[in-house]
Length: 307
Image 1 (spheres, rainbow, N blue to C red):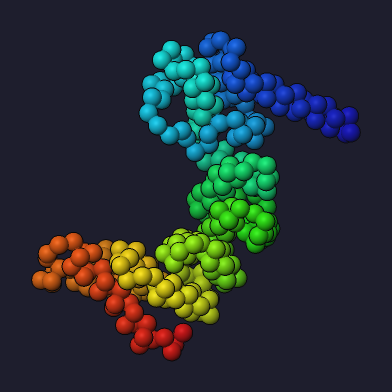
Image 2 (tube, rainbow, N blue to C red):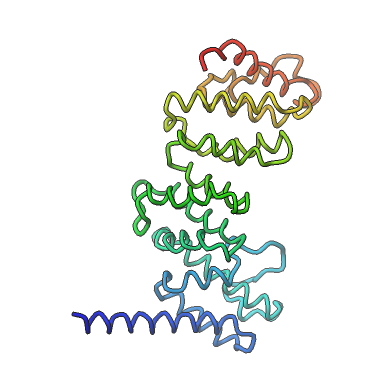
């Protein structure tokens, strides 16, 4: 058994080395278009998990910004691209094609989690967190290959609470946690991370962004009341001229509370927009946004004692 295990390990190591070599072939400026294409197609057939980490560090996993991209599915052959772009678009396409398969995407999550914990990867840690978040959102049960959710949340929570981490990494880690986790133990952390933003509008926007994925039904009664208190605190802290933002936050609070809408799709606390006063100008100048906020604050004044 030990001999068989050793042989299997050697075979896997050889396979991984070959795949790593194919990535090097694609990334080499001296590689011919034909050799680059052959390496690409070999990698498309191989076990993605054996080379996903290296590919992740070489490519732009969230896509490249700008025009002038490849016109075909074979960027290594396109003469109008620079050699640098032929390499980059080939790597990016390889990543996108492999990750488009949900099963393959899920199998990379243990690798993504390791990369999130690797501080040397810098900004790409946020991209790895985004991949984990997407898969958790899609999943209807345990994700094969990922640790139990309690362990996953514990590892991400260590990052989210670590003040030595960049603020954006802490916030991204908390967003992932709140996709499925009960928010009860994380509201104070969301408030702490939001408090480090410079302006009142930024603090409010960050808090709502961090918690917006938390499903209403996952809150305990106590946590729900705390959430409402925090939300109205942010709403009160914002300057009156920021009506559009306050309108959004007011309707977000109303959705959590289950406030019935006057008109479908307008949002809780929003007045009837068919009233004559709202027929002139835009919603910011004719008072529609501000009236929505005023309705929310009136509700809060009447019900604050219950929270």
